[in-house]
Length: 536
Image (cartoon, rainbow, N blue to C red):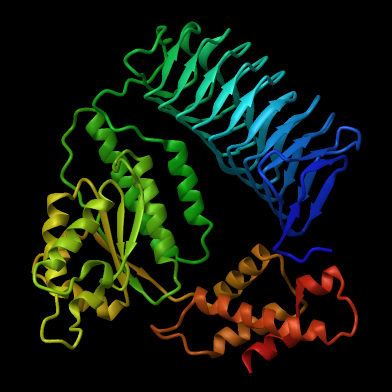
């Protein structure tokens, strides 16, 4: 009966039932202090909470089940905070089928497994898994969660088991008291394990199987079976061990001293992500050429060959809504994966973040912003506004440009600066300082999307929002985009989203006028009349 977005607040007590949420957005929380509400499905032949194609938040609950997971989330965005979960012969929390989990201060105290994350992502932060019969946390089928500040102790088998191309990030975790390995990696998996402590395990501390990669850095391994970190022949993890790590490393560990490390798997994944973007053929080609050159230069450096200085600064030109920000983010992550930039973080700014209000203030603001971006990408949107007068006698945009020119040269190996804006305006911007244009390695032109590409964009946005385009709508959209003017002010993907939002509003009015409850297909399907109404 609750409307989407509702908060269901439960009075203290024990409720012997199972809650199923399908296609809904709800918050279910304890009305009083955390732990005062127990949902016990032990006798109900199901999970305490089962969510499918939903967005569910659970707060302050104790969740129990028997031969089913206490919580299951399939194709669901699950947020679970200050909860306790336990099961019999099943997992405490199971997230599958492209779901996203955000678990904070969650304790799993009983079950065959603690957390199972399959083909899904998200964050586990400040969680605790204890007394589990088998594996504390399972990450599989390409799942890529971040597990941090989490304690895994007293598990009957492994602390964390990563397999079937799992790619978790394990940060600042404490793993101990396991019946076998603290962390076991198998089947083409590639975890990142940093600043953690693996200790007092019956098996080895960390085990990498054949064909696996990944990174172990700043992690203590002590009180485990020997060797502390076991790397099978054919495994290629990069291992930077902490000074007090116990046990010797097995042959096959990659040496890392003094050399930048490249995560080739992540590079391939990011390039695939770039390829899935609609259109932008020339931009994709330019980015690939840049990455190829950077990768070869790093190989040359590793081989002791001469490598010339290279700038990673770029100019992005074109109309709005053509994916400039998205490409800039991917570029920064590529530089990190190639070992060129240590952080890969993305900081987006505009004129107001750089320009001050009095003499000397601008240089201070610009330098502060620049320093915050060191190690990653500084993305300056509508950068041409810095070279335009604001109409006052004292405009400090030029001071920001001059400060940037010096900082970009002084720190060219520590940051990638990307400036973006309209094509003609960016040409004027580059003329604002004699040395500005030379600081950038390349200019990438983002062209307007074609009508066919805009139809694909509408279709993709609609699918992500759980809508379908009805019969004949593709052709009508193509005709609409063909007849509207697409100059430098055309919004491209933003225009496509704006049109889709207009169609949804028209659909809402049409469905309310039916005089009956619309079917599921009615709710999902946009029709030609919706487009006609949105474009009048």
